[in-house]
Image (cartoon, rainbow, N blue to C red; front, side):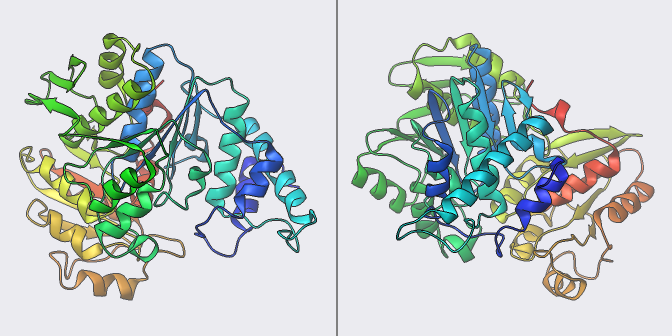
Length: 441
């Protein structure tokens, strides 16, 4: 039996032959053995192509400002697995996670050897994400939480998080990503994400123009769709630093600009407000204001100054997120050059991400990532050939690319690091930065 957290993480990586295996049938008997019913008095589930992590951060920060005891489950992590599970403002400890993993392991073994038509030949195989999700839910159920906020890993309908019947579901955005798993267009992807909605319960939609499939599913099951720009509104967003107004039919609140950078963060904050309003009308305005002003999350337009050089870290890993990144960079140009350290996984739209930023980047420093989903040198070079990064020297890893960029940059230049959570994680490691202080506390 594994003893340390690292040993457990290695163990759970080996329990299923595939990294992704969508579906809830394998999880239900294990969850039943664990006695998992509801991880908190109230639950919010957050899905979406982009903006999930930021929306979770806003919900957490506002709820904690209202003196609620909150647990959050997010993925992926940047530097340490503990980032995925937060309880009352702190990351889960190694000991807590090990206890949870031991409970899940015992339950999956017991579920596998039980008798009946659904019995398996051995322990129930769980993916890394499924194992971790059950562990987080087990910890939350023992933590006397007022609120659990669960970020969907992939899609929604068949994601492990969807084991839980949420009181409020949120879909931040719907765009193209993970097409191999979710479908080739927004309608198919939207229908998968809409699977987190529940009959008679609110579904918060952050898209101005959500796919028809999302609305049809919501109406079909009797979920109460609550749409940004239709049922709740953002007014007078103004410039950075200025106040804005959140409004629905029953209330209007003047709120500060988010601490998180980017125009999209006001939209994410608005969805968070709507979700919490749907749970309780009694949260005071000062809690909304304080939470929005204080919410923190690493790797989302995170800016660091080093010797007169600005380093911008962003986990944008699809064209939709890359376009949002470019939308902030254009009105905030660097005094000097913009050098981009870019690394992406093979199943991502590499060409689309480069195209979204080609007019704001002067020099490209592509970097290889590691792992089974990463492209090799030949494949990465081929994907870059028709883009603005064509002909750029490909570095063996993010650390080498970032070190090269730092050496060539001068005061006034900007280093942009993007393309994947792994890219940002590697940069944080090279820069010697911890992530814990960047989260809500």
